[in-house]
Image (cartoon, rainbow, N blue to C red):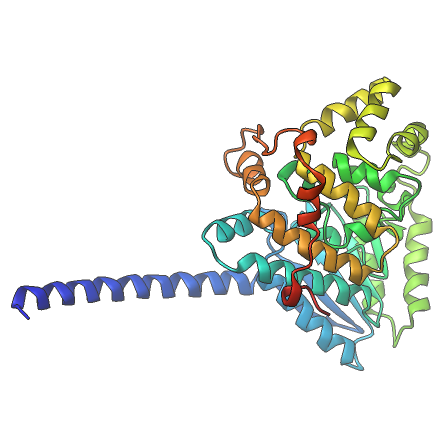
Length: 386
């Protein structure tokens, strides 16, 4: 081997080493950053979890999902921990959803990240639903997507005047997951179908009125509420409910304001009771009221594939257990990652922010029943297991 070749090899090796060292540093800095993404502490009788990514509205990443899950399991077994409180840092958001930008980038780079992320997120949603101790989510601020998944399945959910609830997934080529197929069709009338297809935002006391939250408390009183909860001595579920009930009863904010959709509920129930998205659209056109036409405009901007998946998913989910729904959602999530619309939605809404996604297929008519069936197909040995 000539000297020149040896020299070239050494050069390549040193640049390879340099790259490796840089990557290692990046990984380490990412890890130390990640270590602060969620803060876990024992306070009095309670385990307290703080989602700590305020600049990203506390978006949920894989590291946080894993930390919440393992800590929940520990606290469930710990005789000194009587309840768990979960809240968001920064005052603006509880949790605005999963870190979908990270998800899209990893999937495009052909990493297996999406398989792991959704699997662990849905297993966590189920663990919260079956948690044996009072679990209290303080939904003070934006609570959307993945943030709904770590709150709505808990025993107690506290909304404030700053709460904003939405499942806006059809706008980014996804579907309302994290158990959306379970809790949405169980809301009053056809409200859940309406929320799922349009991504409509519910705010403040309305989040409690529809049953997403179990209690409503003034945002300014959240600190005091938490202090009273952690100060309880060996509390039962009833003791926790009594403290929350007292704060709820004392709250007067927006008490006399009527539910924002109250006058539209008859329209929602009749228009959204159809079994196909095409029929829902026809119902809205025939209704012709300003409200119906506004919803029509919104729906027409959504991914046609997402709309069809979402409706079928809610109809199926209305008679399934939460675990069955999460299994179905896992199949859908993997199909969406393989498809076009999710990555296009993330590009249009989050990356380039031009807000004009080019959906493929572009019309409802082009999304066939066969296409739909493929989204719901079993993944065999890769199916979600609890």
